[in-house]
Length: 408
Image 1 (spheres, rainbow, N blue to C red):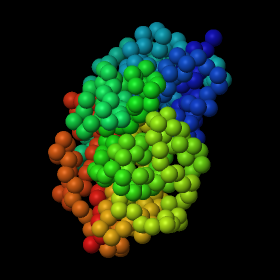
Image 2: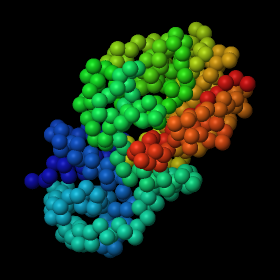
Image 3: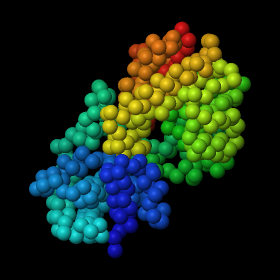
Image 4: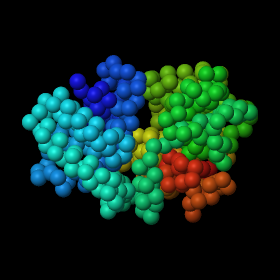
C-alpha cells in the first residue's frame, strides 16, 4: 500500500512543478486525508521545493539520461526525505519505489531503487562540496538580489518561524518578544494553540509585514485609508491604534477573509469592495497605506514554490499595476498627508524604482524613514528594505520594501 504522505506529497509537487499552482492551493485541493499525513506531505513537498537544485545535483551522477518529470519528482522526494528530513534509509528507498509503482511508473521502479540506494550509501557527504544556496536559487532571482543574494538564499533553506501581532496590552505567553513589537514562536507552532488566539487577541503576521502600518504612525481618531487591504493584518494594526480606517479590497473572497478577521479580533473598519485604481473616496485622506500586489518573492521562506512558478518577465506585469495604484493613492492624498508604499518583494524594480518613478511622475517626495530596532534595513535613500537574511539569530524575516511619500 502506498504511503499516504508520499502519495500526497507527489500530488502537491506535481501541481506546483508541472502546473504552476501555488502550494497552499494544491494543499487545499487534496482529497480527504488525515491531518497528520497532510501536514507531513506539505513538509516533504516544501523541503523538495527549497532544495530542487541541490537534489538534482545529488541525483545527477547516477542518471544516464534525463528522467521523465514524474520520475524526477519521486527521486527528489526520496533524496529529500533521507538527506533533509531524517527519514531512515530503508524507508526513503522503499516508499519511493512503491510510489513509482502506484503512479504507473513500474518499469522505472528498479531505477528508483538503484539510484536512491546510491544516494543513501553516500549519505550527507553528497552535500559537502555543493554550493547549496546558489543551486537552490533561480539565476534570475540571484542576479536581482545583488550583494545580499547569498544571505537571502541561505535563509530560504529554513522554514520560517511563526510571528504574531497582538492587541495593545496583550502579551502572548511563550512568545519571543521581537524588538519591532511582534512575537515569535517556533516554526510549525499551531496558531490556534497560542494563548489569546481563541479570544481574538492575536493574529498571524510576519515581523516585517507589521512594519508598514507601524511606520504610517496612525493617530487615534485619524482617518486612514488601507488600499489592497486583505487579508487584514495591517487593517487590524491601524484599527488597534485607534484610527478610523477605510479598507479597500477588490477581491470578494479576500474581502470576506478580511471582514472575518476583523470580527474575530473585535475590531471595526469601514470596508469597501472596489478596485483601488478606480475607486474615489468622498474626501481625501491624511494617511494612506498601500501594500501593493507584487511578485511576493519576499515570502519565499513561507511559500517555497514562488521561485519556481515566478519568472523574470512576470515583474513587468506587477510593476505596471503598482504604478496605477500609486497614481490612484496620490490622488486620494490630502495636502500635507503621508503615503506608505510597501511590497513583500525582494525585486528592486518593485521597490525603489517604483518610488523614483512616482516621485518624478506625481510630484511626490520621499520622507525618509528610520528604524532604530533594525538600522541595517534603512537604505541610503531613507527607504526600508528587509530580507530573510536579517536578524539571523532570531530566525530572519520576510522581505519587504517600504517607503514614505509626501507631496512636494
